[in-house]
Length: 79
Image 1 (cartoon, rainbow, N blue to C red):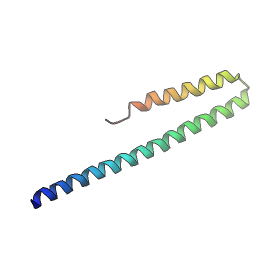
Image 2: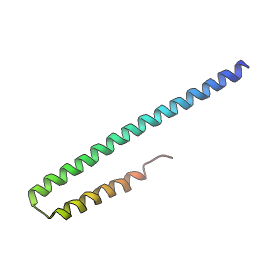
Image 3: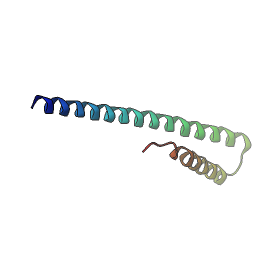
Image 4: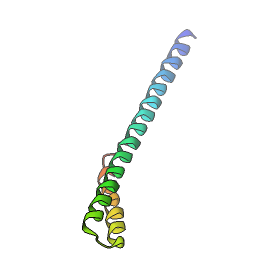
C-alpha cells in the first residue's frame, strides 16, 4: 500500500512540474509576442509618420507583418 501512495504522489509531483513549466512557458511566449508586436507597431507608426504613405498601406503592412510573425513562430511550437 505504501508503495502505491508514494508512486501516486511522485506521479502527481511530475504532473505539477509539467503544468508549472507549461504555464511559465506560455507566459514567457505571450510576453515575447507582446514585445514583438508592440515593436512592429511602433516601428511602422514612426516610419509612416516620416514618409506620409497612405493609411491603407500602414494597415496592410501591419497585418502582413503580424501574419508573417505568426506563420514563422507557429512552427517553433512543441507538441
